[in-house]
Length: 80
Image (cartoon, rainbow, N blue to C red; front, top):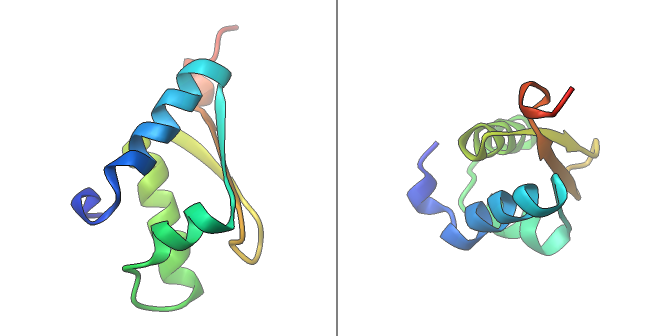
């Protein structure tokens, strides 16, 4: 994924929120911004979400219709 195509504030927002709360939630506005350059359908959008989560170093939870997403710390980084 080309992170340069994303708004840098989306990446920094996720990372900052993860550090503070352990999770970050994207609503419709953030999802639209994330998908604004995506060509293709549902599978292309899922791929972008997964690549974005990987780039941020977090795990992804999302709705079936991709209307919102929750990013959480990787389980391997969570304290025992």
